[in-house]
Length: 249
Image (cartoon, rainbow, N blue to C red; front, side, top):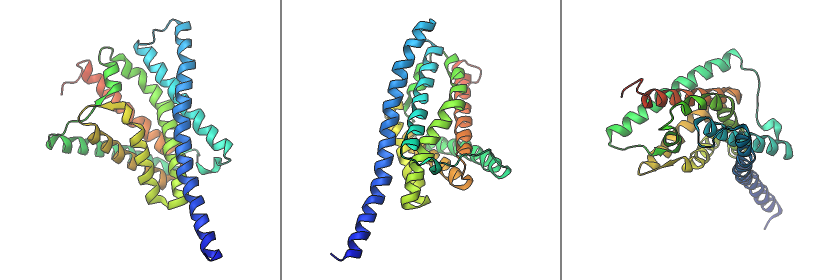
């Protein structure tokens, strides 16, 4: 083999390993640290007299999980010396336009996809979160600050900031958005169950793609983090309203 060919092949292999291996490592760290955070945080609920299966207890356990997400993501960036991989800054006026447009686009796309699936007679999967709060709807309201302060920022740090960033550096923005969205959908597989699992995961994939595009256009992690948190907030508020009978569908 010619030296130039060997060098090119080795460089390509290193590129794949850094991107795919890095993504695998950070997702594995997320799962590990989320489990550790929940196991360490749950005894605090007991000490505070908060029942683990109460609405507040479930919401706080979710908060512990996403604290683990954040520790894993920040730790990965610090240990691998890649903090500059994830741009974070105070939103500019242009960022606010992407934020508003991204939020409106996400809501509109979700409505269109849901309507399309309904027209085709395809039901979505059962949500573990909805099941948890079915008999204590206040749970959904407790989740609103959790999703704004923790879920949106940490999930976007992991999937858009790190995974999409690693893929972008290796393969360019288009592949990065698609790849990160696929990983984002895959990590949600345990959050749903039932016959509509594939349809729901496909919806998550598409919505993740919107967040990925918003991130690429704004070049500021704060933008998709806020959009993500607001989108989840709308969902939780809607589920609370329907579960309590405030709104009838």
